[in-house]
Structure formats: C-alpha cells, structure tokens
Length: 149
Image (tube, rainbow, N blue to C red; front, side, top):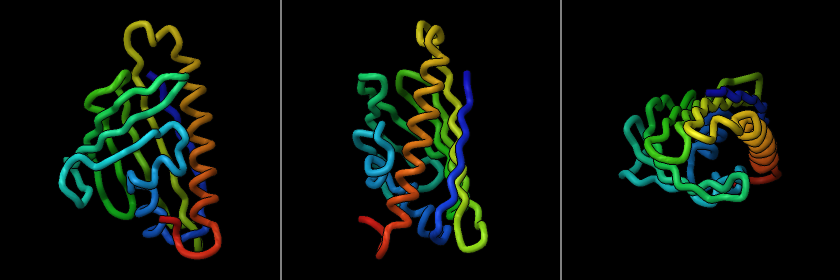
C-alpha cells in the first residue's frame, strides 16, 4: 500500500472550489486520467452515494466504482473504491486560507497480486497525475470570469 498527498491553493472561495472539484462532470477537464465520471445514485451527493469512473493509466482503461464515505460540504469529501483493479481511497479536504482555498487530496492505493511488483511505478504515476491535475484545476478555477461549466 502507498499514500500520495498533494496540496494546491486556489484563489477562489471554498464553496466554489468544493463544488467544482467534487462534480464528476468536471473531473475529466482537470484530471487527465479520467475518461468520464458520473454519479450512479440519485443526487445530491452525500454519504452512501455511488460513482462510476473510467480511468486511463499506463496505457490501459479501467472502470472503478466508488462509494462516498464522508461528505461535509464544503470541507471534505472521501470515497472508497468498491470495484476496480486496485483498492483506492480518496480524501479531498478544503480549508480557507486568507481569500483563497487550500485543497489537499490524499490517495491510499493498495495494489494486489502482480501489481505489487510495480507498486513504485504506480505510485509515481499517481503522484505525477495528481500534481498535474491539481495544477490544471487551479488554472481553470482561477481563469478570468465565471467558473467553467
């Protein structure tokens, strides 16, 4: 198992940043590993909600199904995979920082079987994708004008 945690500070209000980042329809725009993400339970998102994502990593596409395990808008959202090639949990924390929002995303990933042999490579791929995704989200959110749709 490995843990990856990265932060970014976004010059937008916490409510706006939270709403943009937890909306699965926005995720492919800022996370290049996401082909699509959709809520598979009735809205609104909350504890127990289910989500389906198709992720692209290391040249392969894989489906993940997630369950929301914590939801405290606009402070925290946590999910855990219920199916997919690796057990994964994701926690997104949002904190006010002056007139900005600090976002911390923490992933815990548990490769099984033969994937354990390439765990360091998976961990580095997850880290670099997360860093790039958070930078892209920051750029989208801090762009001039209203939030991107």
